[in-house]
Image 1: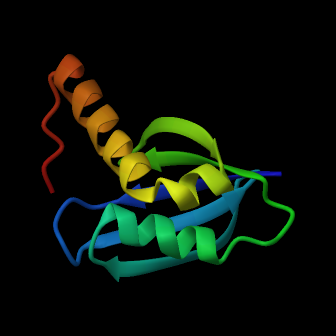
Image 2 (image 1 turned 180 degrees about the vertical axis):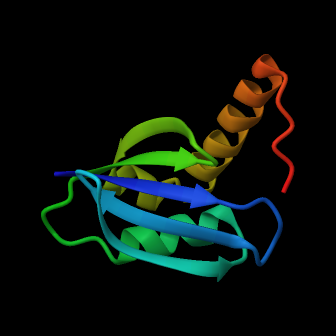
Image 3 (image 1 turned 45 degrees about the vertical axis):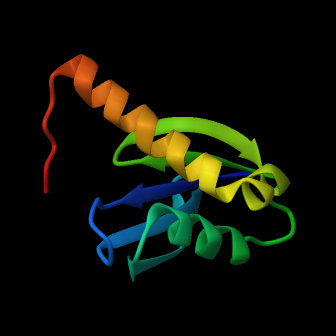
Length: 98
């Protein structure tokens, strides 16, 4: 099973995430301090049948990772998500400031 993690926000304390599978939301939380905190919370709640997660940040997918890779490299995975979204915004000429 591959779950989807959607993360929104840009300022500390204003991050939220949701975890879904086949468009059905499994759980979510808000008020977290960073993308890293969202990833950690999302992974900790995963049922055992989830093998991997597709990571989305602000509506842009950054990749699909085995859960073990996310757990062992959470800061790098979070930074990759932020960088990917920033690069796409730059290419599209978008300023999606909140």
